[in-house]
Amino acid sequence: MHNHSGGISLADFVSLFLLTTIAFYLAAALRPSTRPRWPRHRIIFWITGCLVAALSVQVAIANHDDFASHAIAHVGLGMLAPLLLMLSAPVTLALRSLSPIPARRLARMLRSRPVRFVTHPVTAAILYIGGLWLLYAGGLYPRIHENGFLFAVVHVHVFASGYLFSAAIAGVDPNPHRARFLTRAIVLCAVMAGHSILSKHVFGNPPAGVPDAAAEVGSMVMYYGGDVVSVALVVLLCAEWYRQAGHARNHARLVRRPSPI
Image 1 (cartoon, rainbow, N blue to C red):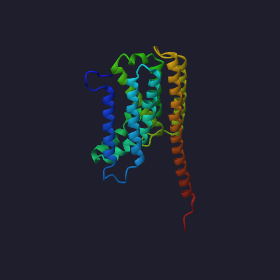
Image 2 (tube, helix red, strand yellow):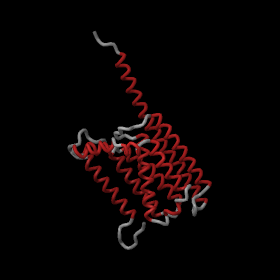
Image 3 (cartoon, rainbow, N blue to C red):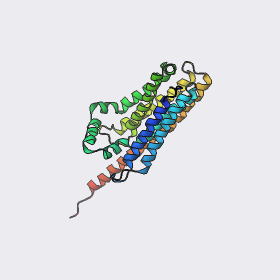
Image 4 (tube, one colour):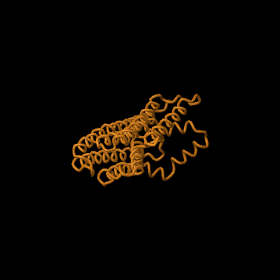
């Protein structure tokens, strides 16, 4: 993870990659041909999300022996950064920016069965919360600090599953297979409960090699930090339901309105 021979380290590679994605996003969002103009708040979400992800990786690598720092990186990389990046609507921007043939290919991929399976709230929840239980309660946590490749794989999974879960619950990008509101609400409540129980489990049963004091601090970071992001998802999901209910009421009024003679 650390390279003392003058080469590029994992943290440097991740930072360079995220800076590149910021450059590509800005190039697509600010191109003169983009009409209507891409919302500025989505650009801010993308840049902030990339910076949070980069900082989380830096914290995880620089303080890999400190469980409290690891918990901060866990919340940033697996929860906050995915939420911010999801709110930046990268798929929508790609569909608007690509030429017709690549855009149609991307649209076909979004409608495919594998994407439908992976983006279903239940699948995304299992990948997300199941991976965290395996990491902290399944004995995987000590091993990621002994194997740099496993460390990278686990953190990529934490980030990717966090993004999939956020998008499955309250995604702003087009989703041909979006689940019903009730399904997403139930899954969100289940994951919130699972994450809270996991945090309490870590508090009372620290992973191997983690001191009790560090486990207590780290579990509280996971518990309260997770609650903040979860509340944000609840607000986004309820706001979507409110908008849909408003559209349904307006449509019902139009249907009941008598036709002029």
